[in-house]
Image (tube, one colour):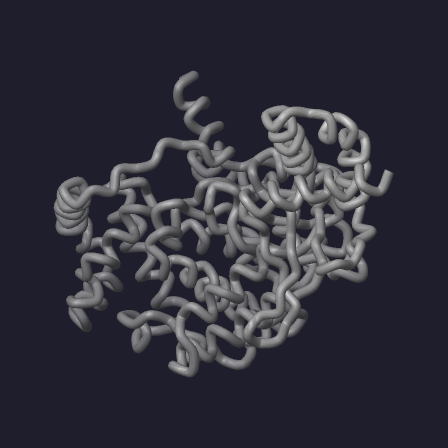
Length: 399
C-alpha cells in the first residue's frame, strides 16, 4: 500500500516514528513471545537443549526483549528467530558455548585473523543514531574458511547489541564493493553470510549496496532476491565511483566518514581504527579497561575527515577542499556581515553552516586523546557559530 511504502521510505531515511518501549507494552509482548515459544519449541531440539542447560540464560528478560526489539515487537517473528538463533549458535560454536555470551576468547586464532582483516567493521553511527555495519569484501582474508568468517561476523554483529540504544534504534548495513573493495572470491559465501545475518536479533533498518561494476551489482541482486520481502524493501543499490556512492549515501543520512579512507591516500582503506576497536574489546573482556574505552574507540571511527569537512587545526590553515569552500563563501559574504544588523549576521552564520552541512561536511577539530593519538571531534553547534562568526570578523579585518 501507499502507507507501507511511505513508512519504508521514512525508515530508510531514519525518520520513522519511535517504537513504544514502555514497561507495560514490553510485558505484554514478552507474554505473547512466551506463548509462541511454548507452541513451537518442540520443533527445535537445540532450543530445548539450551533451556535444559541454563533456563536462566534462555529465559532472561533482557535476552528476550532484544529479540522483540529486533522484530519491532512482532512476537511470532521473534520466537521463530530465537529458535533459529540457537541453532545457528550451536552450529558455529558447539554445545559448550550455547548458553554463554561469545567473547574474543571463544574465537580461535583463524577467527581472530579473519576479524582483524577488517572485512566487516563497526563504522560509527548515521545521523539518526543508528549503528553502521560496514562490509568490505575486498579485505576478506585468503586463509579464512567460511566457518571462520561466520564465527567472527557473529561476534561483530552481536557486539553493538550490548547497548539498549542500538537495540532500539537499529543498524544500517553497507556492502561496499567499489574499486579495490570488490570481492576477490567472486561472492563465495555471500548467501551463507546473508542468511546468518538475518538470525542476529538486531533491527535491520536499511541495507545499502555500493558497486561500480554491473557484475558485482547482479551478484548482490541475486542474493537479495532470495531474502524476505521485508528485507528487500529496505535495500538500496548505489552504482558509481567512490565519490558518487558517498554522495548517494549522504542523502540517506550516512556521513561520508563511514568509509575509513587513509588520510594520505583517499582511495585506500585504513583499518587502524578497527584494529584499535579489537584491541579495546580484548582489554574490556579481560577486565583490563572499562566498556567506555571500547565505546570511545568506536566513536573515533565515525570521525574520519573527508574532503567536504572544515578542519580546525589550532592556528594552522588547512587546504582541505571543505576549508577552501568555507573560506570562499565567508569572503563573499563578509561585506554583508560587516554592515549587517545583529539579526542579519545571525542569518549569514546560519547560511554558512547550512552550506557546509548540505555539501556533506562537518566542522571538525583535532584533539589529543588519553592515548596521545590525534583524533577528530565534531564541534557542537554553539562552537560552530562562534567559529563562523570569528571567520567573518577575520575576513573583513584583512581587507
